[in-house]
Image (cartoon, rainbow, N blue to C red; front, side):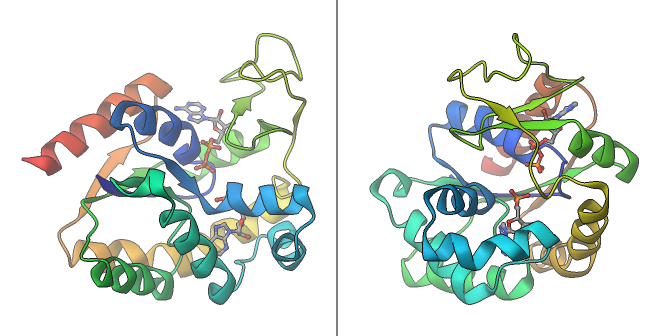
Length: 218
Ligand code: ADP
Ligand code: AMP
């Protein structure tokens, strides 16, 4: 399946993607994780992205679309993928449609995670991620690691993302409403959108997501 996860920053896209990707046996592709890996490796792409990410702004489409396409072209993504954080505006959504269509492929579903803004702010404020792999995600209250500050998955050091500050979160939410939310209508016009509540336990949200994806298949 080719799936897009959409929802405000902190909705739980990365958390859900880890479980869904495992269940569906498709790679989880997060453009945010790809940018963070580039930053920690000190690549030119990472250098281009860093200041914009720290400010909560979007990285330019020219850079982002090429990076996403390169990742989606890897052999492990041939049978499908779960996109998290991409597309993030209508131009990226159109570029993805065109790229898939040129490959003779299409999206199967767009899963829209709905969470009230006050909950999103709490989730972001307590988020901690792993230095080794930013897809290893924890929360100081809701998803505590066994040992404080240490990743349960790989033993790496947990830290707070530089863009998870109160000020940047405000910008990111505004960017989400003005630039990203319009992609939901873009995909509604294609009959692809399932909206689910992302409130409740992580496992409950995963069950809702799987049920919505099963319904899309029939
Ligand atoms: P996103 O990828 O949408 O930005 P994350 O998956 O990183 O969001 O989740 C944001 C924070 O919220 C993380 O600290 C994560 O542990 C926590 N979280 C995710 N899902 C839930 C949930 N259902 N209930 C409580 N906290 C959650
Ligand atoms: P995320 O990890 O999804 O919260 O993304 C973190 C940051 O990376 C965003 O605030 C943007 O600066 C940048 N980013 C991630 N994905 C995209 C995208 N598709 N388009 C532009 N910028 C992105």
